[in-house]
Image (cartoon, rainbow, N blue to C red; front, side):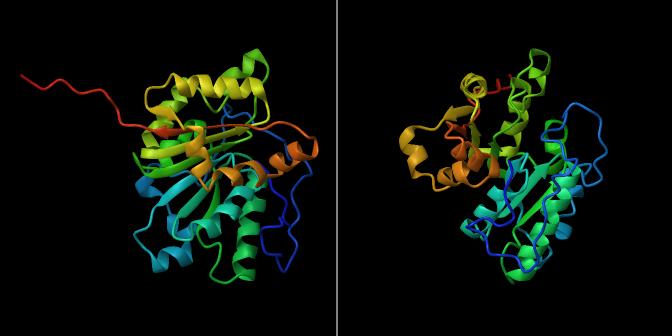
Length: 255
């Protein structure tokens, strides 16, 4: 996802922050080896005070409960921050120059709006490899996948962020009743993601009435630069959201 620095819903910063468009790839190979200095060995080793210093000083026991995977330029984070002022929301992004922009943007928003945006932050990481390094089992209430790379080539399909293997990780970090959100403008990718989620036993697709009742859903369609670009091109957006259900497996009792 991507977002302009002067979103209509975000306050105007005192100092303009330029996006690092120069030499920034639209996507990054998630299967390549990268050095992630911010990636903790385990969730217990995560330095959340460095990410949310003011918030955790007042609320030291609060944990991150929402994650935007591939957050781009942070548009969704900025939208969600005032909606959930008592929740910690983390964006994970693999491109280092984009993360640098996000962190500077959040720093500027905080200084320009005292007491606001203290509950959002962005770290550089590869969610396809290191998601359980950041979050405990059942820690998250919401996890977002907005306009992920479709990886059209057959040889690159294994790079797609939604697949059967990775769904196990997402089910692990989501609490029962937590919601996984997907949005794309590529119908083939939408069908792919929905088919994998439909066949996974720990997720149930939300009904139309449940989607209408969820205040987050409208933000998914219009908060990011990718979403705005689709609107400008009069394109179609496809959304599919799934709730984490209880594991129906009952372990045999020992005799």
